[in-house]
Amino acid sequence: MSQTYMLFTYGTLLPGEIRHAILTEAGAHRLGPATTEPGYQLLDLGAFPALVKAKLGQVVGELYEIDQATLDYLDRIEGHPHFYRREPIFLDPTSSRLLGGRIAISYFGRQATDRMDHLPVIASGDWRNR
Image (cartoon, rainbow, N blue to C red):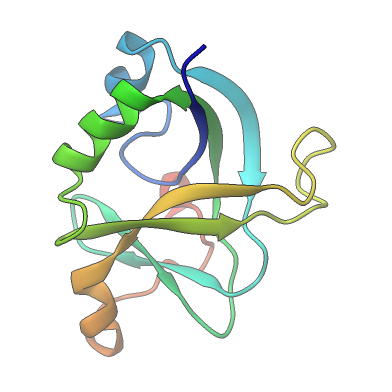
């Protein structure tokens, strides 16, 4: 059996967004909605967001179980490790009974972190409700 990963999505990979088909075509298993622990924010880069570590804020998204081939493909399209950097992310244990306290992986905006003082914050932490 191949290794699987828990992926926290928060932007263009969400249902209804431009890159969601990547997950559905790869057979990713949707585990449900999730919210990060406090300490993360979304920055608005226009056509897509960037997840960054911050003192305040939480981010709303979805959790998927993906296989190694899907992870490798996502690394390429997300520009890991130069544009986005894949790192562990901590989920709020109250955001879902199924997901409580889990650690997942997500793509952090590496370039956005360097410019976060000059980019608009998505105050809701929810890309779909920006």
